[in-house]
Amino acid sequence: MSNFIHYRDPNSQEMQEHLSNLPTCPGTCIFIDITNSTAIKYKSGIAHWGRLLNNTFNLITFLNDFPDNIVKGIGDEIMLYIPDGVLKEKSTYTDYFSLLFEIYATLDNIKNFPLEDLFLNCKVGIHYCTDVYNITYFEKYNDYYGKDVDLSARLMSKSKVNRIVLSEKYYEKVQNDLEQNPAYRNSKLPSLISEKYIEDFRGVPHSTAFRVIDV
Image 1 (tube, rainbow, N blue to C red):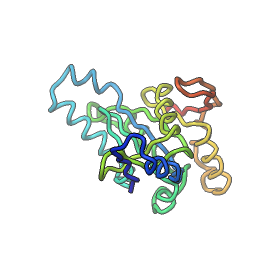
Image 2: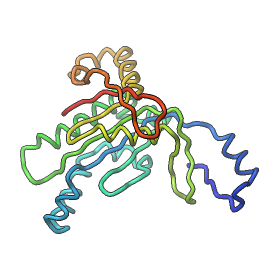
Image 3: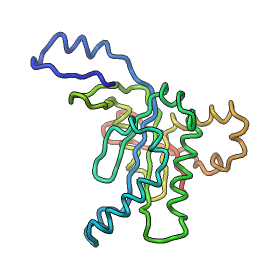
Image 4: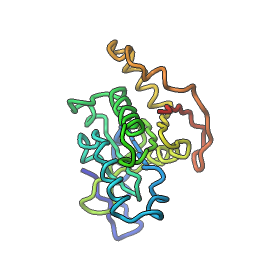
């Protein structure tokens, strides 16, 4: 559970010591945004768009494996943070490749579902983080802060409907899984990953490398 940060004294020495001694929490940060949902809300009532949101979230089945890792919801966008230790303990998705494959398969299922008017398409950003802390400023809530969470959110600006944007750091984790697990090499997913792009994101003092998968 998060370290709760709450000090009445704005210059508290205890707070500074607490923050200075916090360990980092390496892991995977994922943003999933349901696209075009705002426009649909203006064109229809809740009976319609509420049904579409229900169906779409239900089809993103891997969320059921990480219920404690859904840490933020803003409109129709959710953020998951999966620490390395949590991922390794799972029975279904235990590494970075299998997690990426499941996300790809989910977007593919939504896009190509044979019946219309049941789901809304999504876009995704995913980043492997090292500079993140498991802290919260609100008691009893689990949350994560750090510059890598901010960078994960910036990656979403390069995503669009039916696209996954993955940082180069996450791509390197996927490549390592491919090297260590020969069974993954039969998957078509690696061939769908684009070449490397470079972007300067607002507030980030260095260029960021990323790749995309268009579903």
